Length: 188
Ligand SMILES: [Zn+2]
Ligand SMILES: [Zn+2]
Image (cartoon, rainbow, N blue to C red; front, top):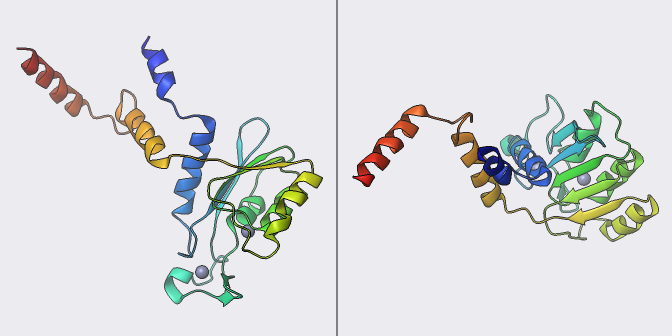
């Protein structure tokens, strides 16, 4: 019965991967956008991950300011590119989980690697150059792109509850014991 309860509160795969993307984004080096991308293969294994960041050894936007061209900061490698560059497995048929809205360059690269599904969390905006062609490119490749609403506050609360529960990394027997005695008190 206890197992069943635990299963009910486990995050879904979508919630799980997006939570991981959320944490990756905290390493981003450009505060115009802290994006992240995870690449998950056909067998639901993580085979690539990246965030928006300066090239290795280069200064960060957060330290020296942005490198603006046509209204966009071009100092960083996009999360999707970093994820592809550091991927460790076959990307054919993979799913890209993107925290942020992918630009057409990144969509093209993902499609070239035969990524089949692109899921992103933010509103799709076509303001970046060529954005209006993204859907067409995806369709021609026989791939799929979709936006997904993830309630991060709710998801993180659910995950934190698991971590604080039995067997979790934040589990504190003293707190559990105190709660037990409190309940005993309350029952009196
Ligand atoms: Zn920047
Ligand atoms: Zn991009």
